[in-house]
Amino acid sequence: MSLLRQPILLLAKSDRVKKFVSTMPVSSGIITRHVAGETTADAVDATARLVDDGLQVSLDFLGEDTLDAAQAEATVTAYKELTAELGARGLGGRSEVSVKLSAIGQALPENGEKIALENAREICRAARNAGTTVTLDMEDHTTTDSTLGILRDLRKDFPETGAVLQAMLHRTEADCRELAHEGSRVRLCKGAYMEPESLAFADPLDIDKSYVRCLKVLLAGQGYPMIASHDPRMIQIASSLASRYGRNPGTYEFQMLYGIRTDEQKRLAESGETTRVYIPYGTQWYGYLMRRLAERPQNLSFFVRSLVSKK
Image (cartoon, rainbow, N blue to C red; front, side, top):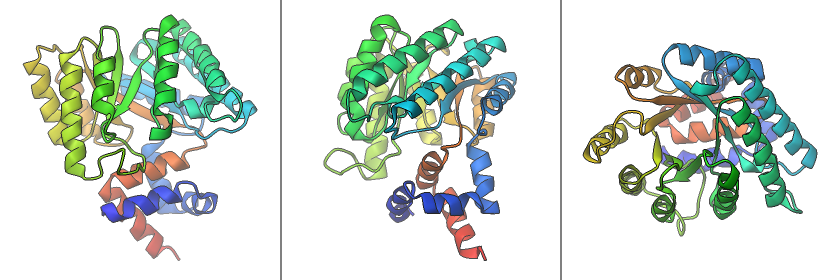
């Protein structure tokens, strides 16, 4: 099944396949399972339902590879509308927003980093006013240094801003050591991008080993680890390490994606663990969906069967 991962990720950039996939009844079901909807109202309603179940939420307005300043500005406006609505409905304390810097100008040909930083500051300010926080999503390895640099600048005024690190990259254990300080929120995930073997672990076992090494660094540190995994073994290891390092519930959290292992999400929350669900929404759902399909073998096989059976 891992042989299908690269072709699926390549399809993520195909508008033609996007149109094909979105009109298929079977794959449309996959879309609604993983994406909360296309509007702010859809996202906030989904947030309220999860909060009622004792869960917390991180919201991602889908969009990436923005090469137009107006589009970046529209994304900032969408986040401001989102945070205002979260605040108005009293959901700020149980939610946060996740922001891809590529969606707010990072890749613009002139002054992209500066534009992304200023746009991120605007979103952070709106989030703080709504009683919530921001986490900067991490994308492929070409953006890692830029994203961490923008994070450092943002944290001067918004120290609550969260970071994301991907265990599949060789560099990540060292990055964990840099970020495992007091007040630092770090989401650790395995990674969902297609990366060169010179920079990233390719074998799933090597990625798992890296994930555990990074977990040890974060849980032994002074920051707030956010453990993003659906892997039952990783969750068990994380719980054991938290106990070993004297971590009480509430000094770290588990994170899972919207629509995946929902029973486990509720189980963790009911056991007293802070558990956050990552909710994507918006019209630009295609790249996100394809990465989710590439990550999970059962979704890949389901998707391929639906392609073959379509008349």
